[in-house]
Image (tube, rainbow, N blue to C red; front, side, top):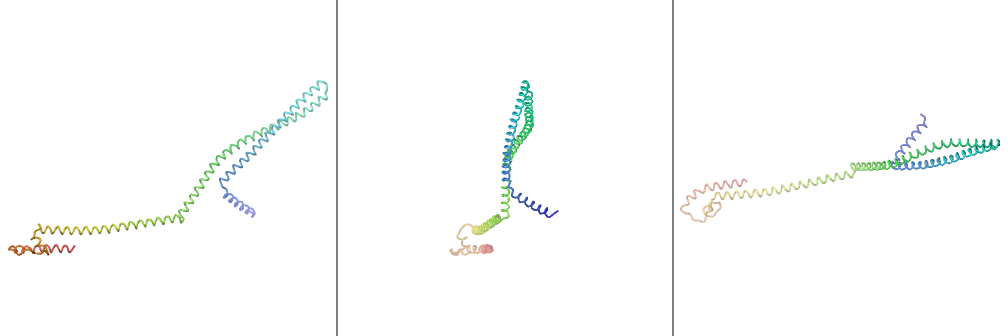
Length: 266
């Protein structure tokens, strides 16, 4: 392969690539329809010109045929009058017009065929243009939809890997962290409050239990029972029954001492 052929192939390949990239379907479709309409105009002009030529040929044929018939009648008239020379001259003119009429008839038949062909082509081209216009609108709509979808996909792709989407993800993580800290603080505050109330409730229960035990030990509130409590003041003088009361004091004191020991261990 020669160098010139290789260079030519490279140039043509690059040009084809540039042209392919530069082709916009919408613009190309519009231009194609315009070109087809221009072809239609030219074809209509050709059909009109062919029809006009056919009509002129038809007129010339009719005229030549009429002249041939006239010279035929004149030849007959001259022969009837006994003028053979004049009749011969008329027949010569008749022959000339007859030959012209025959030539025009052949051309007229050819022109008729050509006009019929042009008319069929004209009708076919009009149908193709109408179909092309319909397809053009549909293809343009599809091309626009494809472009919009491509742009949307590119935008989604850029959002998926770009800084904007990354910022959204970082802010989402930060909001989740803030919510977690808020929940943890609420749980801690709730736990502290619960512990405080638990202490209060436990203290109140001990006091209530101590009061109940005192009431159970002392029985009905009498001066003698109150005098038996630790630290109670003795206001009554020593009576004759003092020995029996003193005999009961050690058991009460022992039970109270045991109760104090248990309370101190709480």
